[in-house]
Image (cartoon, rainbow, N blue to C red):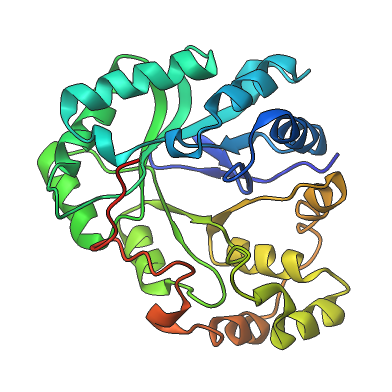
Length: 282
């Protein structure tokens, strides 16, 4: 089993350098996927209320031979629960659904600035951490102006910001902004999901051949060398293990820049979800 490197967060918590994502997996098949991922060495398991699979993740925690304290379970607050009282209740409800006493990590899924309630949501996470419901708190898809606002309002800086970050939309300016604020960047769907061809891109394929690796491993390594924690998803045990086999090589600066050059700007977003426009209320 490959041992995953760890990264220290601004609140003293440490995070595995690679996490396992569970979007679009659920039921018995999803349970098996999570269990094989844990067996492969993943310890950070990323879910969300909106994924409708928190129960499955909880069952994986109970069935796994790995002690609960060695697993980091992360979930996200949905847009419908940004009001303070609703946010506190949703965090509690999610814990009941998963069947655990606390979240290791919990994020606000989207800022929804048109609604203007993300400050309340962040205060709820700050307080939930004090109540012992969450170990480390963060956000997802927050832009610098959103980050600065919640920091100014509460005096608490998010430990992590999970954002869209893949070769066709590298979002490097936001990665830099996070770093400036002392926030660890995570990447959701680092392979760009199924709707683009990043894993077949000729530049990525050529680099894979050069380093004797798979295209997915090249992208994961690119994330790691940019101090980004990729939240990867794979259904087969073979791919799950391969996605962890990335600590035995390094991309040259020139090769990393070749991947940066694949960026398509706003056109590269996988689903056109701009944080200032996207409304998520499910």
